[in-house]
Image (cartoon, rainbow over all chains, first blue to last red):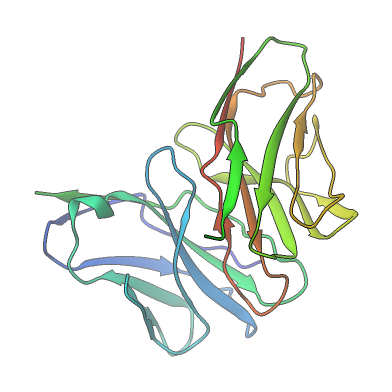
Length: 111
Length: 113
């Protein structure tokens, strides 16, 4: 599985868009980009995933660069409840299905 | 509602005792996983299973054992051979193909005294 690089921490003001970057320069053609978040002492929560097209759901948007070497998770109107550790993970859609978690980005939403 | 249930939420054991953590899912997912998380750290894979009666070691399997006798259940035993068992344990499940995401349980916090 390709390795990802994320900033260790970020801050964002409540009500503003939070943009979380992720580098995955060694991603291969069949690997998806997944985003999860973990609120303190809870299990990680799935947010969104994509292969090469941009994706949007009720929680967030995922922007993947054309070369697929990086992506950005966008929380359009951050709230205090979005304070969490955000994990960017790349993984294939077949074969070994394990997710490999890095250190993630600790996002703090400030009032 | 479908989901994945871990029990108990908190568990205390004396050093040298084996302890089994429960994980049950009613999502009809094929694959199940156990992760360990230490304070301030990411998740590390202990074991995973893609089908019933089959499982593979993850990155930190030493001192742990699992079984997968039913599709719905994937219990994890923390044995006395695990040198530092105090941690937060997370179970997850997923469909085995198609790039689907994981569903995680709420975790079991194990403290060994």
